[in-house]
Length: 104
Image (cartoon, rainbow, N blue to C red; front, side, top):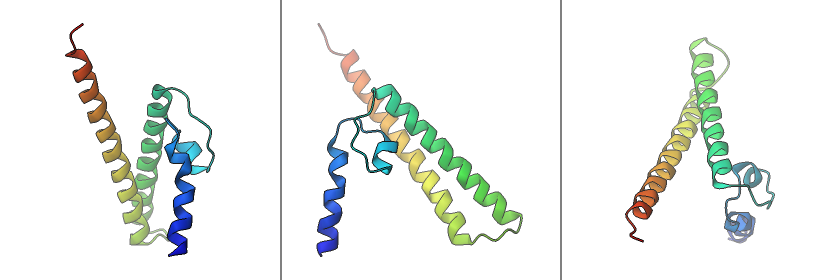
């Protein structure tokens, strides 16, 4: 029980606006740059996860010492990263369309 409460205190960096994924992974609480920087960083993160998944599949097919669980984990991580990025895109487009329809 105390372990789950202690893990909540590590989430304080998430309350900072536009914290970059690198800052969150490193546990830093530096505030990120612009929204564009955050999106570009996220795109790079998704591309890296996809490359890692592709490398895991190729290693498995080549008969290297990698378990099926590791391959599945890499693929699932890349899939979840891509789904999250698509949801960010959808919400951004939705917000843009709402702003576009505002009358001055």
